[in-house]
Image 1 (cartoon, one colour):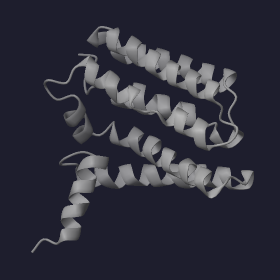
Image 2 (image 1 turned 90 degrees about the horizontal axis):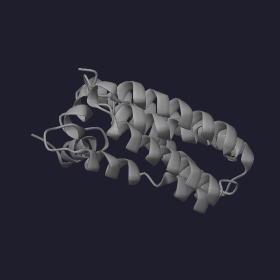
Image 3 (image 1 turned 45 degrees about the horizontal axis):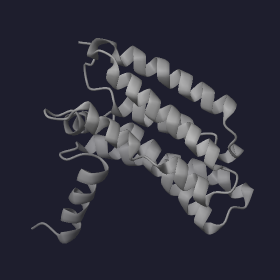
Length: 185
């Protein structure tokens, strides 16, 4: 007999990981999400943020670190790169990641200019990856990711406890999400 809890767990797994995700994929995805959330929260505790800021600082890395892992699984690749998915879908997925603006609104020290720069670097990088021929997407993705992470790490003022944010966002979206399995073929 299946319980309502099991059905809820499968529904949640299908949304957060991928439909038909294997047990190992689910374990490593949730472990990555939890590790990111715990690490980011531990970094933020000495800064004496409000509970609202700390909650945001915990939830955002849960999504980014977990999403980095999820987006590299075979189950998620089947989901996001199935027939009929276009560059427009992928760009929409990247554009929907408005976490820089959430941080700017709710975490002191993470300004709107920083949010705009990180968002523009990520969205611009996605456009470059999606415009590249399929056989060059992987090297283009790594090139623009390295550049975006370098620019964000050296030119964007963010609190020390949020230094992980731009690299995690770029890796999740440009490297993990945009690259289909076997893109070099």
